[in-house]
Amino acid sequence: MFSIPSQPSPDVTPQRSLHSPVSGMAARTIRLLLGGLASFVFLSTAAAQIQVNISLSRNLYMIYEPVICTVSITNLAGQELLLADTPKDKWFGFQVETLSGRPLPTVQNDYRNEPLSIGPGQTIRRSVNLTPLYPITEFGSYRIRASIFVSALNRYFSSSPLSMEVTEGRVLWEQTVGVPPDSGLPGKNRTYTLLTHRLPSSTRLYLRVRDEDRGIVYSTTQLGRFLSFGTPEVKLDRRNEIHIIHNMAPKEFLYSHFGLDGKVRKQVAYQDWGSRPVLVPTTDGGISVVGGTAYDPKATPPERQLPGLGDRPVPVPGPNATPTPKKQDSRPENLLSR
Image 1 (cartoon, rainbow, N blue to C red):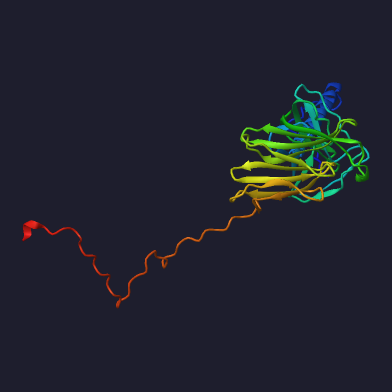
Image 2: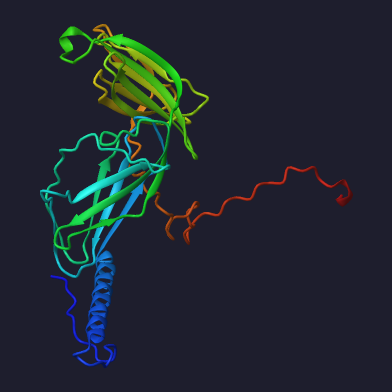
């Protein structure tokens, strides 16, 4: 599909006798050099035909936190390309290694990528959680690169590497609870841990749910911003599911309800308009939120109407308007005027 035709170049080929063994060796040498140059030009041109970029929301993560990597692929080949797995190569993958160069193997080697067609000039984006795919569970720094294999060109195209760091947060609260027999969940115990993680611009609150006996971490979920001078309120219901209220901004709170499987059951934002939201046990063993006013923090605030030319703070008096009587002067009479 992509080839460079070889043509004789009279300006380059030396003028020697065809019967001379030296001329034949020189001609073969020149042909090899031209072939190598043509291959180099082909590879350099092919390398510019697919552009791969990756991005991370930040470069500092907490251990076991989801690391979402966004990959963008741009087709610059001038024609439609089919991205599909072959018996030997996967068309989409990552290379993750430590800063010292030690590569990390994938946790799942039998994954399969669905075929995808990309038109000329088209850019596609995919977001992938790297945490369940690679063992980035040790403190330290890592280097990430994405690679795309195009079978039509028989070539890999890689992105520039990105660096990230994995650290641990500060434990605020921790409790181990039992798993009810009728929950249908594996294991006997769960450990809830509330942690704070200091980022360059803010402090975040996290909830980690794990089974220490089996060595399984079900989730490490970010609950949002956290004001360091506040203390989260935590309660457990009769099924040992956790309920949390924390202060994420002045007069703003977030209520979170998580199950023993680490999945969120409910999250509601509240504002303190005269009464602060608190957790109150119910008669049936549940937990309810009392106080505060629920609101949607993602909702667009209503636009303020700018005053028009006809909007005046004082009505304009009409032609027949009665003049306002002048207020009499209550000052004492000047005695010298008498």
